[in-house]
Amino acid sequence: MTDTVLIVGAGGLAKEVADLVTAIGMEVEAFYAESSAQVLHPIAGVAVIDDLDAVKSRYAVVAIGDTAARKRFCGILGGRFELPTLVHPLACVSGSARLSEGVLVMQNAVVNSGADIGRGALLNVACCVAHDCHVGAYSHLAPATQMGGGSSVGEGVFCGTSSVVLPNTEVGEWSVCGAGAVVTTIIPARCLAVGIPARPVKQL
Ligand SMILES: CC(C)(COP(=O)(O)OP(=O)(O)OC[C@H]1O[C@@H](n2cnc3c(N)ncnc32)[C@H](O)[C@@H]1OP(=O)(O)O)[C@@H](O)C(=O)NCCC(=O)NCCS
Image (cartoon, rainbow, N blue to C red):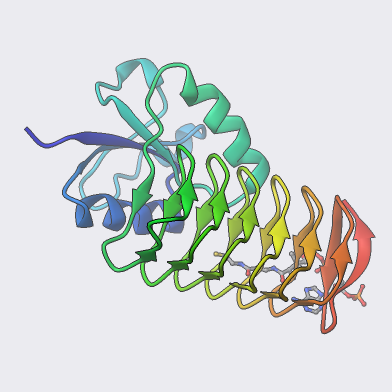
């Protein structure tokens, strides 16, 4: 029997994660949205629900890009569902990389040797995590993010599309790097950093 999955989220990312789920031979039981307005609009014929008690699946995946929401839902779901680690067949993950529970690796992402990916992190399309990198729990590397060898992002970091974290540099927990930013040094925790080189422009 095919395993079914609850997808938490009902936006564009949820549709992409549904493709990932079917690409690995699982089925989407339903999408979950907190807003009852979204419940009225099935996605590709699959219901959007707002009641977790109605779910039969053993598995749930968080398909929300916001990192604080990723943490919140991993907490809510962790007690009642398994949070599988899902790797798209078109992604490439080294046998020596460590992926924690609830990690999603989208198509064309690369995770190289010795990389360590924390719980509930989202490695979006075509991002590259080089050798010995650390990606903190619940972080989201947006499409085409590049992390150089030995670099690190803390818990809850969001790296915008096509951002670059140079080798051996670091982004502090819950910080945001704008699209196209190039991190050349240590970015402190809880700030927004943009530009080349990336500079903090505000506290979060
Ligand atoms: C960085 C980002 C999150 C900022 O959003 P915000 O909190 O609303 O911040 P603001 O728009 O107020 O921007 C603050 C300042 O940074 C500048 N800025 C914003 N994004 C920037 C970027 N990517 N590169 C350079 N400067 C940027 C703004 O122009 C503004 O400068 P100003 O104060 O001189 O006018 C957003 O612009 C961004 O880059 N998002 C990435 C989106 C993405 O990659 N999504 C992928 C989804 S899968």
